[in-house]
Length: 246
Ligand code: SAM
Image (cartoon, rainbow, N blue to C red; front, side, top):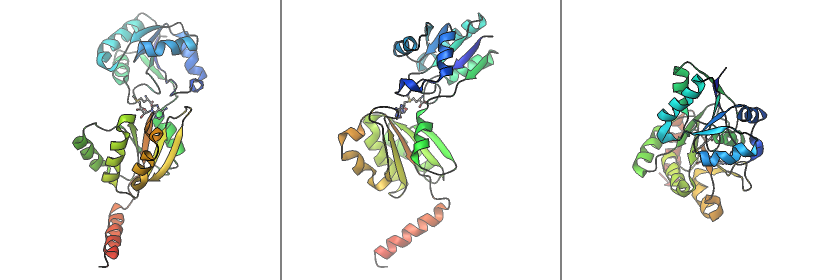
């Protein structure tokens, strides 16, 4: 039976490809890929002779039709993105939706995802987490979105690009205050993997202490607001008043 297999690929360490993912890539005649040039070496590495269909974010509708045509011809297709799980801050959701609407099966494989990998090593113990993905690049919009998150008692998980990590961390500290814990999960599964936790108030200093700390790929996790956010605020005001000798 032809189906669309959603196949996560490694974040940096090729060994993180699952046995089942390799099996699927070797078995399917077609792989729809976010960037065919990027995925070609991966397919070759794992011994897959599948042919590639382009499926980047600007042609997802068209790509979906291409995938559906293959499925209708009885041929299975795998969907991959550049790294990690397709459709998680990556293209793929539209293709998956169209394929299911067209009456074909979508089979997801579990595998690498930067958010979940970072969360597992964060030590943040909230029972709930909110995956936010990328914040907007524009300062005003970013601030607005952070304000909407500030009172939520959930661990917040952000993706960030290296050239924006400094300003994002500054914005996080401004929006959430200096006390909550931030965890940097940098270069996960790679040679310079770094996991560092500190209060938001010390985060900028930590980043700036060594230029290498600002390089590579990041997941930023922030401890959620205290369950009773009002009490927290009251306590802060009280401490301020005490400090002022009032
Ligand atoms: N689909 C991917 C997933 O499942 O995690 C995410 C793709 S998104 C375009 C890329 C972002 O994921 C990066 O900017 C970074 O925030 C995060 N990321 C990807 N690989 C990472 C790694 N090795 N270490 C830390 N963060 C990573």
